[in-house]
Length: 247
Image 1 (cartoon, rainbow, N blue to C red):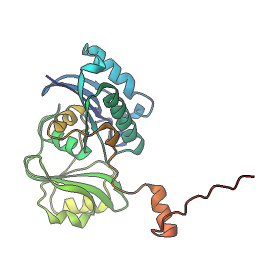
Image 2 (spheres, rainbow, N blue to C red):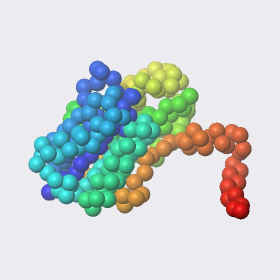
Image 3 (cartoon, helix red, strand yellow):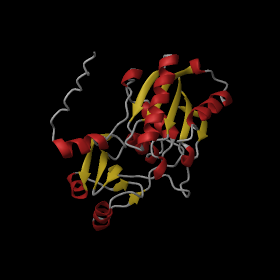
Image 4 (cartoon, rainbow, N blue to C red):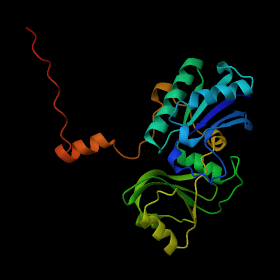
């Protein structure tokens, strides 16, 4: 059976000490979990990912060439955490010729909530996942009662949640207050996200591979530098830098 290596370290700041599971890495043999290596979310930025992958593959008695699929939770998430995971996934896929699969983080969370990870299923009815909160908006992805996506994720205001049926909202502690108020007013429970590499691995089984060079983070908003440029200059392109004349 093909071996899938899955990386779910997309949102380290969203994890809390009381959460039942930690993010990390999983190895999937076909559709059965064989090994999991959790990572301390407070140390993800400290070169913990590659050593954890090495420990996990050694424990499973695998070599890099045994990995046929690399699944990575591609965001939205922490800027550095997602870029590190994407870079490592691209490198492994490029060296080993494994298939690379970018899993939108919302799909990983949806799989976890529907019992495809290490946690028991805990959601019934249509639901939404909120990520990348900023100001009074958040990146929202909607799913049906089977956990299947019904619309691409997009930046929304709280009032926009009324567009689709919604029984549960999955969101971390950074959810803007208007969304919390909307959920309270409409009796919609808010459930904490479960960042589980096993769910990421299983969510990847329904997605198509991506050439390693095209494996990119999912950014919900333009980078801050571009936003500031547009505030100052509008959408005018930057003038090309002219080379200085040489003597």
